[in-house]
Length: 156
Image 1 (tube, helix red, strand yellow):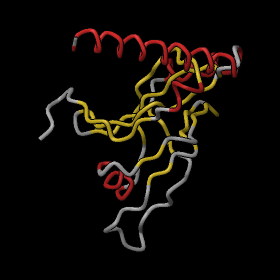
Image 2 (tube, one colour):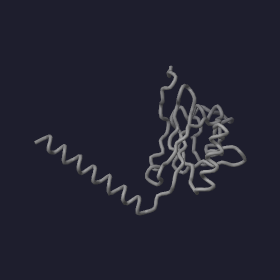
Image 3 (cartoon, helix red, strand yellow):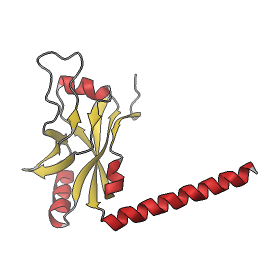
Image 4 (cartoon, one colour):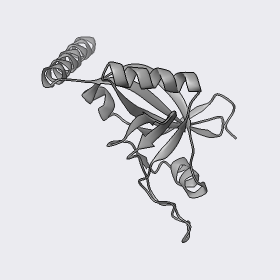
């Protein structure tokens, strides 16, 4: 049994860090149906095209794909639907301000199991320009070359 505070990552949005500058991060609960919970616990969650939005004092996860549960029957869930995020009112207000005034986006970065509950990490993000992505790729390449040179030196 998972102990309280222990985290098991169910899905990771790796492209988020490549396409956006990730600023603040929030942990949110998510309202799921029974078959969605079972499918998510088996890692059948895809966050690639998903985003979050605040509307009418509520936060919503949009375009997240949770595959149908293999043992589900006719009561199985729809894979892509609007899902409610569970946040405190103050957090929702802060997210609303940041997305409205500063033109930032809410991107889910990962879905994980924490203390038996499924949580979503939401990042307040600013889109990267093409040259930012190129600079990041160049820096990553230089770091890999330096690491390889150090490894070669160590072997000699």
